[in-house]
Image 1 (cartoon, rainbow, N blue to C red):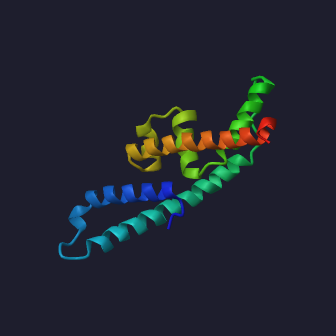
Image 2 (cartoon, rainbow, N blue to C red):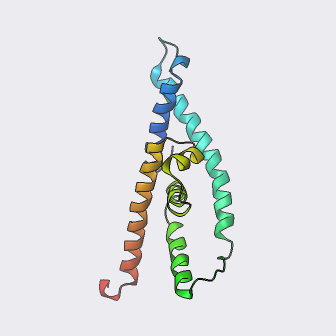
Image 3 (cartoon, rainbow, N blue to C red):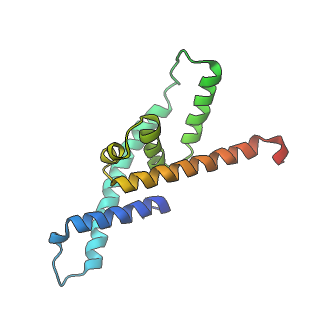
Length: 148
């Protein structure tokens, strides 16, 4: 359903947490697998709806001109390059990295905002950093004349 292994991993983890939390809602003798898949489906749909609203907000942000500040032109260029790189990673990973890295929130605060477990947020930030490094390495190869 997710078409992204990182999102699928998060969905499975969130499903297990929710199933354990709502274990009293399971009727013994019924199909546990079907019950868990129902939870998974509902989580996916919740996240998809929330994601749609987040994408709209992020797209609006992405189309705003870069804010002018008193920083040097070199710093502004670096910030624009970083912003461009951030837009090349998945929205879930970008959100996690921005909340923890740029907004300087704790993992717990970021997890609460995203309505996920702290471990999920830590995993997302870790995957976001790895994805950002990969994007940066790819860009470096494309701009390095020696790599041709």
